[in-house]
Amino acid sequence: MNIKPIRNDEDLRQAFARLEVIFQAEPGTPEFDEMEILATLIEVYENRHYPIGPASPVEAIRFRMEQKGLTPRDLEPYIGGSGRVSEILNGKRSLSLRMIKNLHEGLRIPYESLLSGAV
Image (cartoon, rainbow, N blue to C red; front, top):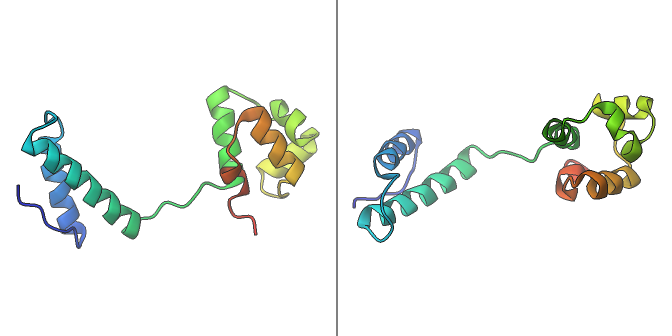
């Protein structure tokens, strides 16, 4: 096992190539240990150099709609009339605290997603 820090994208490419070779390693083997260490190093490098921010509240709502096969009309009990739903989904209106609470309780959308970007 020859593990080194991942300092640049070339190191990252090499780490991925090695990980691909040992990915199916059996627990308790040196290859399995190497796989766990490489996965951790890759995750740290990617989080530092290619961070993925939280989804916007609208993206979170749209994602839940897709998951559950909902239409904008199905959001009316949580947000209000069709005009208000349209304004929210088109980014022309922000969610109120009541809407956030309703969406969280009714559709189980995490508060963190509904509040992202809020100041």
